Each structure stands twice: as C-alpha cells, then as structure tokens.
Length: 356
Image (cartoon, rainbow, N blue to C red; front, side, top):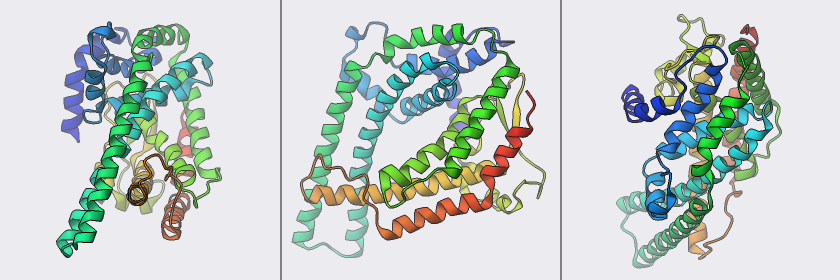
C-alpha cells in the first residue's frame, strides 16, 4: 500500500504545489487541507472544454479509480463543513452528481465481470448444456447493453457538468470562507461532526430487508468515517497503541488480518495538523472490516440481481432493493458485530477527549 500512496503523491505533486497555498500556519491550514483535495481533480479538466472531446474526458475519468476516489475525498470534506458553510452545498451536489454517474457505470462494468466470473466457475465444475450456454450468453449480452447505456448516461452527465469550470471558484470560496478559521476552531468543529456521523450510524434505523435503501445505506454512512480520516490529511491521527492497550482489546486480533493492510486502515500522514486528534488504529480496523464485509455482500447480491434482470431482458429494471433472507441476516450480523464491539463508542470517546 505504501507504494500506491507514494505513486499518487508523485503524480499529483506538481498540481498540488500550484494549487495549495504556500503557507500552512494559522487559518490557512484548513483551507489548504481542502484545496489539496480540489487540485487533483483539476487535472481531469482542461480550461477550454471545447478542445477536449467529451469521450476523451470520460475515458480519463473511468480509467482506474483515481477520479472517483478523489471525488469521494472532496465530497466528504464538503459534507463535513456544509453545516458551517451552507454555500459549499452547491459544489457538493456537483461533485456527487459526477461521482454517481461514475458509480453507475462502475456497477454496470462490475455486473458484467461478476457474471462472466460466475459462469466460468460454473463451467469449470460442469460443462454447460447447449441451453445453459445460450442462457449465459443472453445474460452477458444483456449486461453489456446495460453497460453501454450506463456509458451514454455518464457521457451526458459529463457534458452537462459544470464541475470543471467551478473548481477554481470553489477554491476561492474555500479560501475566503475559512479566513479566521483557526486550527483550534477547526478541531473543535470536526470532532463534533465526526461524533454526529458515528452516532447516526450507531443509532440510525435501517431496513435490512432492503438492499439499496437499507443495507447499502448503512454502509454508505459508515464508510464516510474512514474516507474522512483519509481526506482530513493529518487532522485525525491514527495511532498504534502498545500491545493489548487497545480500548477494545479483542480487536487487536484484526491486526493479523487483511483489514490491517487496507488503504483506509493506513491513511498516510502527509500534512500533520497544528492541532490534531489521535484515535486508535485498532478501532479503525473494525470500521473498515464492517464496511468491507457489507460491501462484499452488497456486490454479490447486486451481481445476482443483475443476472436475473438480464435474463428477463429488463435493461432499466430497478434491482437495487432485492435481498434474500440469508443476505439480510448476514448484514444484520455484521452490524451487530460492530455495535457489540463498541468500536464506535470508543472512537467517540477518544474524539471527545481531544482538546482544541
């Protein structure tokens, strides 16, 4: 993972150095934290859009996950600060609109890959009959049509999006609004907002009999926490506690799992804040684990639903809320695991102890 972070820093260094304010002290620190997340997105947009074919821009946005990941980072900060600065909401909606389009296209692409991999595994176990082979080909053809539709929809969103033109304006708005926003004020505000987010995850009511509006909604809200830790770029420090000193000792075993290697378990410390707040890495492991576990369940449920829809030739059918009783039970167990671990409560306690 360290190689990935280093590569990203090298690729974006020139742009960041141009866009980020040179001074890092005082009330410029928070503004710089946000403008650093604006800068990488500027590289995807040329000042004169008429010189760049929309299809070329779309290709660059869907190439890998860099653009969507950066949109998530910026959206997370605009969500975080919109309570204090409501005029950031306009830009958050623009970022989300583009990210949603990329997400829909990614889902369509993943559905094709999910079906192809599933059929390959099935065929390795037992050679398909002619009828089954024809059924598989029908599914793949249907999913490819959906992918093509998603690409056209994304292209239209990119054509209509004002994000490229508005990013410089957003940078100016951020620098203006955060004038006088001291490091101590920033930490006081951020820790309250993070606690608000975690309480919403802990106490919110979610219908786990529905996939998109229940299970996935719970995951979305939980996922914002590790995304924010990454995006805040040194304001919330992830510390390694001494052995068996984790606020929840049972979570130390996760240090030997793949979760401990995940990028969100290891946010790089690039720009330490003047006033930072430390939280235990072992608590973050449980958040990342639950996010990943529910994400895997969601992907499988959506993949199977997409296959069923393709068999019925329903290109535009909404399949996002179907979930089996077994999947619902599994998702409930995953939520129960993180709640019973008290990882969320422990993070909130650690945030409360931070002094601005």
